[in-house]
Length: 214
Length: 214
DNA sequence: TAGATTGTTAATCGATTAACAATC
DNA sequence: TAGATTGTTAATCGATTAACAATC
Image (tube, rainbow over all chains, first blue to last red; front, side, top):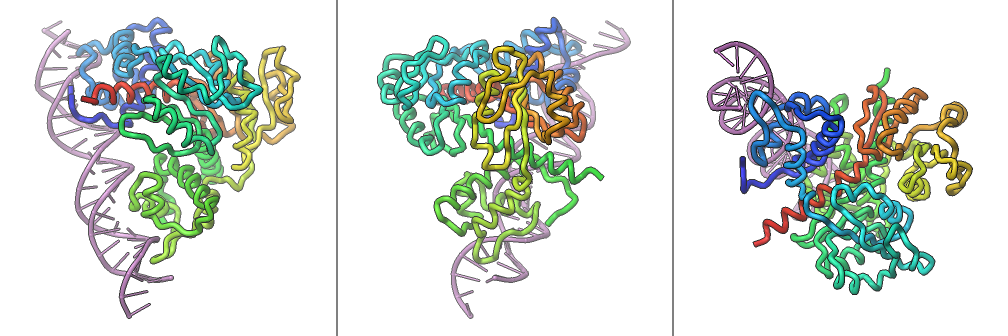
């Protein structure tokens, strides 16, 4: 165990992947796995698997490997999946609505508790149990409800404004779907989903493959 | 210029970010930028900016910096944005529909030309100009239309099946929104959007900040 | 010309891989 | 016990940063 040292971002990014593969194994009824097997499934070396876990402690048994369910729970705990998180979605456009309807996040402890927009046609509509409210009610809502995460799915021109608003209300987590780089204080975490970036990367590799092909 | 050498994935991932920031500068009417300024905006060092570009050639002018518009176009060309790409979306659930309606991809040259599902309630409906068709018409559609990219937004249980289908039809690019790791031949490019992974990462950093705070 | 900033090589830093003693 | 596989240190590899000559 190496406590105190800052764990590299790249290791953190792999934790959900481990969690995902362990969940699969668990669902397949497999109860035991070695770093070699897990690495093979994930396309990384067994060394990397063990080195990654080593950052957090020791979860295995020499000569045996890892108990799938136990390891899964350990990683879940590191990720904080045991802490329930409530989210508000700001921007009830197509993407915002799709996320609000995407029930899969709930099994990891993330629940949508509010959806906000400025479009009068949308306000009052319901998405699953949640009513779409006007953005000018966010302050009131956050003061009356526990809100951990703000999901920002507004057009890019409003992104900064919305981020500043929710930061001002004390929200410490932002899931940013706009292409804007948000400047946030040290105690606010931001995760970005840059759809266009991902698509452009795909385009690059397609072009590359085509050119490499003789 | 370093031709022949394989350019690191991490550099490729930064190209769309450069492109995005250069587009911003361009829209703000700024015509010239130095590696220092661009790096500061993006939160990286000027060395990294120059080193990244060095992989592809030389786009600047000593003592001056870079012409924003020219550099933007160069990077766009490296990314292949000048090549129009057509996409089909498989899985017209909330996420699939949201992506089909997300017109922003078009300005980068990516157009949705077909949407497929198996739900009879959806088939025949229109999303922008595109009709939702039954999945069993994909083969026919792909034989009659140029399709570059398959966007997979089906439930995870169908992911492999759909991927194999489109690969069999000769599609060389997959934009995968399922949490399944797809096994594809060498000449097929895959880009993943793992929403849950991103959310879990956010959760980790929120927890981390909370604990670090004294 | 003098000042600025690139392109490019070299140095440093950090992440991945290898190796192996510990031990189940 | 013998075999397997971890935890952990050391070696290697690759990416980032620093430095500076070239040159606009």
